Image 1 (cartoon, one colour):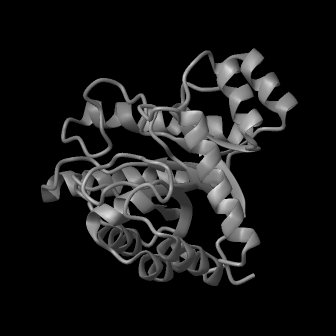
Image 2: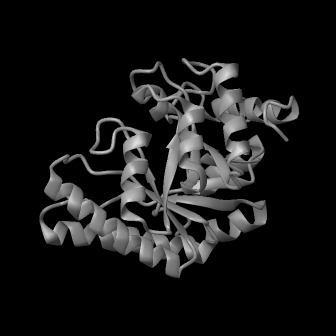
Length: 263
C-alpha cells in the first residue's frame, strides 16, 4: 500500500513544503496544476525521492469555466485547462488526473459534462494517464453510486472513480460496498475524516470514521486488487496540518502492519 498526501494541506514556499512532506515520511504526493512548475521544485522533488501519484486538475480553473458549462467558450477553457494538467501529469510520471463534477444538475449541463469527459478521457489515454471523477456532495454527482452510473453509462475504458472517504461519510454510502461496486473502475483513493455532515478534511479517526470502518475499507480495496496509492487529503485549516498528516499516515501504516488488510 503506497501512502501519498495532498501537498496543499501545508503552507510555506513550495520547496519548504516538499521538504516537510519528506520529513513526515511520505514518498508519494498529490499536486495541483500550479505545483512543480519551476525547475528548482522539480529537481528538489527528484532529490527527495518524491513521486507524483495524482494531479487535481479541477484546481485553478479559469474564472467561470467548468466542464459542464453551457457557454462553449467557458467549457472549452475548462477542457484546455484539464488537458494541460494531463500533459503535466504525463511529463512528471503521475498515473492519474482527476476532476470534480459541475454544480448544474440540468440535463443539458450533464450532457456537456459527459462530452467533456469523453474528450478528456481520450486525451488522457493517449498520454497513458487515468482520468478519474471525484464524487462530490453538493454537485451534480453527489454520491459515488451516481458517479459510477455515469462512468458505466459512458462506457469509456479510461474513465474511473476517485473514491473519497469523507464524501462517502457525507452521502451515507457504505464504504466497502462502494469499493466492491467500483471494482476495476476504481482509479484513485482519498482518505480524510469529518463529522458526517461537512467536508472538514480532518485527520483519520478524528470524526465518524472508526478503526472498524477503516479496516473494512482497506479490506475492500485489497479484495478488488486496487494497486494505486491511497492519499491523505487533509485541511490546511487544521491546527497542525503536518502533525495531522503524520498521525494519519501512522494510522494507515499500523493498519497495514496489524493485518487490517487481507494480505
